[in-house]
Amino acid sequence: MNHAITADADRVWRTGPIRHQACTCGSVVCQLLHERVMSDMSRRMFAGGLATMLAPFASLYATETGPGGATRPPERPLLLSNLRLFDGTGKAVRHGVQVLIQGKLITALPSAGEKVEGAQVIDCQGKLVMPGMIDTHWHTMLAAIPQMTAMTADLGYLYICAAQEAQRTLMRGFTSVRDAGGPAFALKRAIDEGLVPGPRIYPSGAMISQTSGHGDFRLRSDIPRAANEPLSMVEQVGVAMIADGETEVLRRVREQLMLGASQIKMLAGGGVASLYDPLDSTQFTEKELRAGVEAAADWNTYVMAHVYTPKGIKRAIKAGVRSIEHGQLADEESVRMMRDEGVWWSLQPFLQDEDANPYADAARRESQSRVAQGTVRAYEMAQKYGIQTGWGTDILFSPRGTVTQGRQLAKLTRFYDPMTLLKQATGTNGELLALSGERNPYPQPLGRIAPGMLADILVADGDPTANLDFLAHPERSLHLIMKDGAVYKNTL
Image (cartoon, rainbow, N blue to C red; front, top):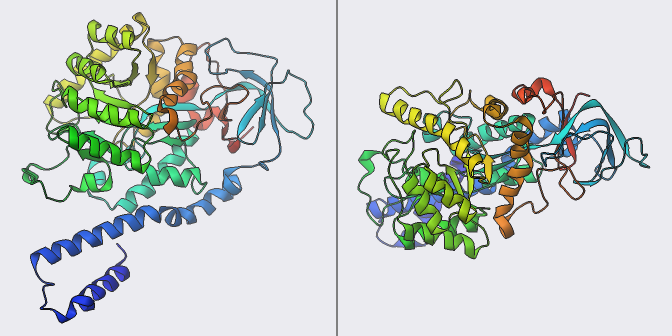
């Protein structure tokens, strides 16, 4: 908080129009009102001034990448030549083709050897050219910090950590993410305005949770909460919002849409990491879920739902949810329901391996084991029933885990052939992002290399017909990283 501003406001409070009345400044009501106003002023000033706060970082990044992150004049065409092309459709790698970029867009795929007047040519040295990758379950604000830091640190510190991790995310080759919950709006704006480098963000805003749900982070001592009590700190900063009943769900969903959510995240079941809600619990009634779905649909977008169990999955689908997040405990009936209703399955590689979150208590490890066993079966059923399947990581509160982002895609070749898997992380995930419809903040298509697509392109050492191991070491294998036609890395 700016102490000078606080002091000035406090001086006005004590010497303003009420100074001739009997002094009530020390009353409990006035003190609470004063604290609430100051907290709100600080929060609003911080959110509105994030771009200013991050501006000094922009000059540091510009030193490495040029103004705006680009190493070329934006008006000059750029031609990638001498390459092997994976275009994001899953079709065979193509030879004898080039990629022409004008501004932010791919404009043509000329034949190899064809000259383009005025274009700057980058020789890709026979390397693989592919679309930028997309992680459809990412927590921009929460991935790279420990949970205790997230619960106790100043919001400004969290934004600085998230801005640094956003740059690292881009440098791993992820040019877009669907944020699955957290106060990412201001960082999204800073990235879009070129103040800091990072992936484009599809923000969900605060996760919508019932009382005792997967997003209820309050302490036991905070219970019960009276109807007129202030929001908890987690709610105030926008990580999660607690809503009980259809009316409250409508309000909280509409608030996130007002703030700029491209889709809504509702928590329809228990989890592994949360304190109070068991993994098998079902959360929100069908009517409550439907209230959120209808509010989102009125804004021409959709609801994604965190849920694991068959009961929760079926309830969410009946309510109109368009994307099941996790769902590793699904049975065949609930998977067939996904297929019949055209619902997406957003799966993550929860395999209780070296990339998994460590848990000290036996109960959480047991839940983690159940989910890991379910993950194997989930990938099998997704393919058996032809479910539209997105890929994401859901790395959360794990500074050491974020570096595994590409590896967590590469290791899934135990379930998919590499070309199908790479399509899932590019073209297929681009289709999942497009579910946001009129609320899509980046309306040009993503995830493929074709005329009219946004120029999100990687040049890599690797052969996706053999494996995806090269994605596990992006610092070595990625030689060029481009987003929106701007080059952020080029070691060719």
